[in-house]
Image (cartoon, rainbow, N blue to C red; front, side):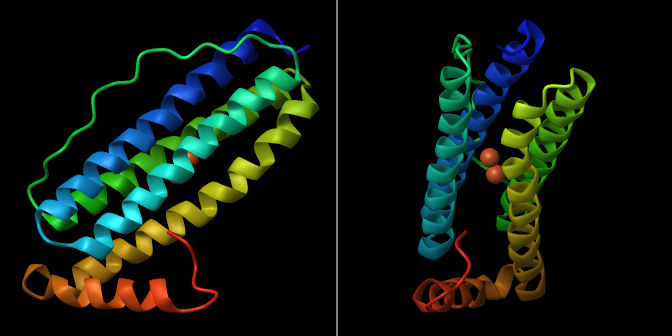
Length: 168
Ligand SMILES: [Fe+2]
Ligand SMILES: [Fe+2]
């Protein structure tokens, strides 16, 4: 059985992951409104992944016999000043989540809760990937610049079609 403090922290992470999921739906909608279909698709896929992350926490809590609680999910921003601002917001969100996961890992170690630490290791590794992927996208958007954003669309479409290409 895990501690009350850890249970509370893991339940809070469910909200953070669902917030990410919602934020990426909103971002996908924003990109679609600009006609950027590939950008939009990438963030819908990412949104599904974030929901899966939330469900990993739900399943872990159930596995260890701890209560699941889902708190209020803050509203997502649905409009941005530019494509770059939207992707920057996604990077900031991933940086926040990385810090949250690191805090959870620190708590697990503090409590000598090695089962939870082992569970969290997957998220530590996942965040490295997530930061890398969104940083790469932000670089592409900046390289292309606002006038040639369609080049980013073309690149993403090629990546979608390429076998073995990294998922969003
Ligand atoms: Fe996540
Ligand atoms: Fe993420």
